[in-house]
Image (cartoon, rainbow, N blue to C red; front, side):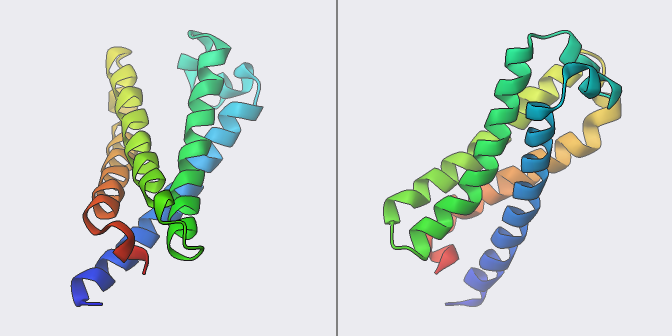
Length: 141
């Protein structure tokens, strides 16, 4: 393993841990809390869209968080090489989820309040997706 692969490994696992915790907590909150509680927590947009859409977003965040952790583990440590692509797809899916979320905040005029977290999560998810794509299974060897 060369120095680039070691750096890739450290960065990929650090991003994986950060993103998995962040998306899991956000998804669990959106999935389990009543809409009124979400509105009180500063997510005013949740009262203007169907509850099913809010729950679908939550589900996507939880599945993405699970995918970026479980797929590389299944691929590298359990020998299921086919699983690596699911980790890549999960990371790209989280990027897409945040791009749609940022677009919604821009359309609603809320981006000035949410741009820091939106840009940070988009960047982190994108970097993870690129690392997983570029290195494939070797990042987790």
